[in-house]
Each structure stands twice: as C-alpha cells, then as structure tokens.
Image (cartoon, rainbow, N blue to C red):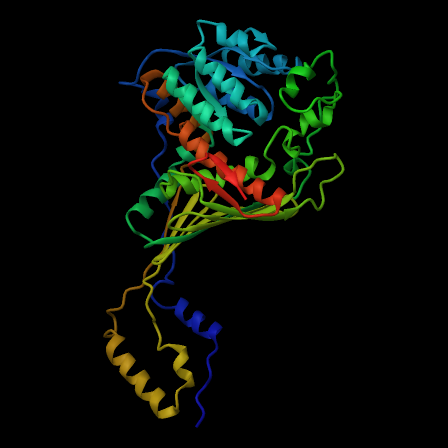
Length: 457
C-alpha cells in the first residue's frame, strides 16, 4: 500500500500546530518612559533648560511643540531662513505659554545668546555639520535631527567638536529612546530568540506627501527667504521653491530614502543588537519609478543588504505602495517582530516535531522502522507536552518616543550625563545610510574602510 505523500507545506502546517506555534498570550503593557513623571519631578534637577530652536519646518514644528510642554524646559529664541516660520514658531509657543520669543534668520544669534543653554536643530541635512560644530564651539549642547551628516567626513568633525568642547550632542532618531526597542534589546540580550542571524525591516508609502511632494508656501519668495544662505555649500541655483520644500529628493541637500527612513530602522537595529561600528558592506538596488515630475534625483524605491560581523540585515522601503512598518529580528530560537508600538516574541525550540519528511524517500519497511524509533525517542506521554506560546508587549496609550527622546536630551543637558544617542552612535548609523546611497548610485558593493574612515567600492 502506498503511503500518503505529505508535501513541505503540509509539514510546515503540521509543525505550526506543535510547540513553537502556540497562541499568543495577552499583550503586556510596558512601563512608560521617564517623561511621564512630569507631575512628580521630585529628585530631578530643578534648573530650567533654555533652548533655541533652529529650523521650524515640518519636523521642527513638532519638536518645538513637544519640547515646550516638557517641565523645566523653555524656548528662548527661534531661527529660520523663511520669515513665515518665525510667525509659526510664535503661534506654537504662544498657544502653550502665552508669550512670544525673539526670532531671527541667523542661527549665530542664538549661539551668541548667553541665556540659551542648548539648541534643537531641524534643518536640511547639508546644514547639520556646520551648525552642530558651531554650536559646540559656542558652548551649546545640541539636539540634531537625523541623519547626523550629509557626507562621511562630517561625522568625525562633529565627534571632534563635541569632545573638544565637552558638549552633549544627541541625534534625533527616536528609537534609541523607545521602550519597545528597549524591550527587544533586553530579550535579545537574554537569548530569548537564540543567536540573531538576520534582521528584516521595511515600510511603504503610497501618497504624494509620503513621497516628499510637499507644497511650497504660496508666499515664498527671495524677499522672505534667504535663498543664498539656505543653499549653503551646495551648488548654487536660481531661487527654487520646489527644492526648498522637497529637499529630501535631491542629492545636493539630503540622503533620500536612507536618510529619511532607513535611518530609523538602522537606529533600532544598532540599539537592539548593540552595534558599535558601521556595517562592513552594503549592496543596494532600487530606482526612480514614479515621483519624477519635480526633477528629483533620489530614488523612490530602495532595498539594501547590510553585512555586520555576526548577522545580516535587509531593509527595503518603497514610496509607491502602502506597507505597514515592520522590523523583525530572526534568531535560531525564534523571532521578535516590532510593528508600530507593539512587540511580539515568538519562541521556537529549533527541533523537529515530526519525523523528517526526507525519510519519505526510504523504502516502506525502512521508513516504518525510522518513524517507530523516532516516536519512541521523541514522543512525550499524553498531557505532558507544553506549547511554546508567543508573548506580546505594547507601549501604553499616549506614549510618544519623540517626547521621550527630547526628555532624555534635556536631562543630559541638566545632569551632564552622556546622551542616549551621542555623535558616535549617530555617526555609525549615518555611515550606514551613506553606504546604501554609495552602492545605489555607483552600482557597486559599498565597503567601509575603518582605517581610512571612508567608503570604498
């Protein structure tokens, strides 16, 4: 009589009903971050931290609105090269505090202000290095949006300036302060999923705003925008509202998909996996398929394979299809999946739970003997087998990792304790972004040369 012939899909389906494929337990709320102790700041330093806001665009307005709601934090001045954002800054500040602050086009005015302790910087990438170094040299601590740099060499200049002036520099990639990623780091460190050998991260958008097709302010003109200064060290061009609003799509000013979106995934990976150096190699593919009408030269789709000493990472982002943002840490004993503010731990024991399907190729008598012996050696008495259930954790309602990250920065300014995402950490992540672009634009494998501090093909 012929045996039934299970295929691989049947085997895997059967396996999913065995230990390791058990039902998920109820989700457990994680402890909220330290900024939730606003109402009872007992024991915390009482000194008010006064900051200057440099850059009041899309991200800057959110950082400003969050920062001024933190206890013991005040905005003492705001800077932007577009005058309309001076108005917007004070609209935000007045709504919360009932007062207004001085505004300026010159960030140097904030650095010269002795009442300002630190600056929060949210400007296009090609201005990051200059402002951070100038701030450190002026004795100001700095919170700067991600990615830290526009070019590889700039990162080491920032590190040098921070060290020389004993300044706090914190890079604004908020997953470094996320309680969800902190839980993942804890679980990986405990060996909950064995040896992590692969990490996957991805997300997708399918709308003009998500693809950086931002509408320039209708009143934008050379009269209310210092266009010459805004261009910085980029190639000089005639006044262009599109480049001003959609700078992420142009290599002159930003890092495109890696600098806007990869950087978040890389920050989470580096934090969870305790990465202390840039990736060794990177290989990218992608293309500019859809969002071409504004003259951009950055792709709207990219996937990059990263090579780290003990694991590999694959990151893919598209601006052409809406996809949930998910990061998965894949280990020899299971998987951790992070989706939004929720973490799911799915343990696996890494063992066979059925006789190996390869033995279907044995002659009948040999196969029967193998199966009988397998069950004798592996079957447990009825009622003694234990399923390995998944565990789930989630951030509490109202949790905001932007708030936690800013809180950590201002606490570092108060206490002089190290930043949670200092210039070295930020530099490793930024180099990973630069490697992705180097590989894509040069159509080669990007290799990090630590001794030369540069990317080579």
